[in-house]
Length: 242
Image (cartoon, rainbow, N blue to C red):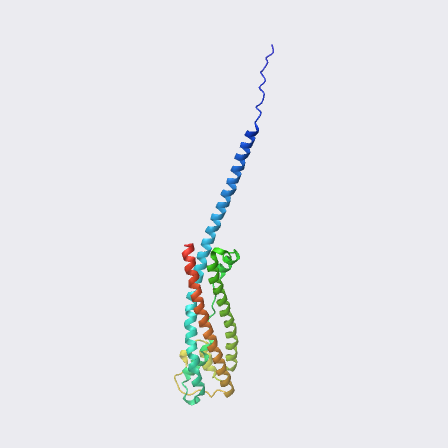
């Protein structure tokens, strides 16, 4: 006996149903796309915030480091004016310890090492080139300018120190010179009278000291400017990203 199963014709979708499904699918994809963009944007903003905090800390480290360099430059600037009359004195009445300290004090130096890795990274990401950070970008550009100028002065100071070393043998005795460059000026005797320096070397030394004086003035000017713009940048970063 045959069993006949009734045939159920498949439901034919209306165009409106296709449109609804398409709209729903499109909406889901679009919302997912926007959600992912929002997540990426929030993540990028968080990374920017953290990097800018590091920029602020590095600037603070630089300014702290420059406090030492400022004190050093101020002290050496004073010794420049102090050495001129000593160079004109009778060698027999010159205080030996004072003479060597005033003359060779300029050979001692400490490099300024800027903590610029975070600033360079932020700049590479374009954080200092968008309109919303225009004021900060201005302060950072000033910081970069005066650091570059500071390094240029550093290069000139290397040349002057080399020139001073070259004439030192005509103005000093080796044992006392060696004590000074070995940071043992405390071993110098507190006596009066020095080996008569060569007149030509004395003249060269006077010109070198004048040039050192100009450099120390330049150092101090750059440090003041770095403090000014560095602190403004730090204040702005801390206000905006903390």
